[in-house]
Image (cartoon, rainbow, N blue to C red):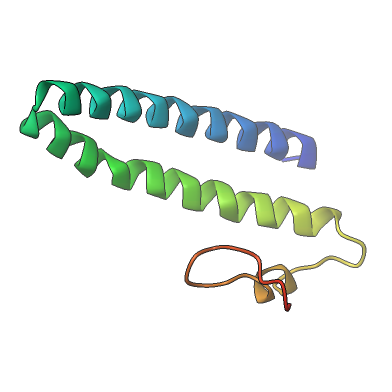
Length: 92
């Protein structure tokens, strides 16, 4: 698969994740307004799916970026990431 087609696939994965997130936000709002505990629990249990999509998209994005970096960044791209919160470290 070419780099551009993989990038397009990543875009499609992100769009899917955004759709699931928007649906979850709508359901969470409905659960809150209606004090619907069952619906709130469904929203919470569905969060795992969004988390998996985010992790896969993040991995794909780093891999695609490493393919475009001069000399190939490879695993070094992960070196400056904070394993606890996923934020870039300023001291890296």
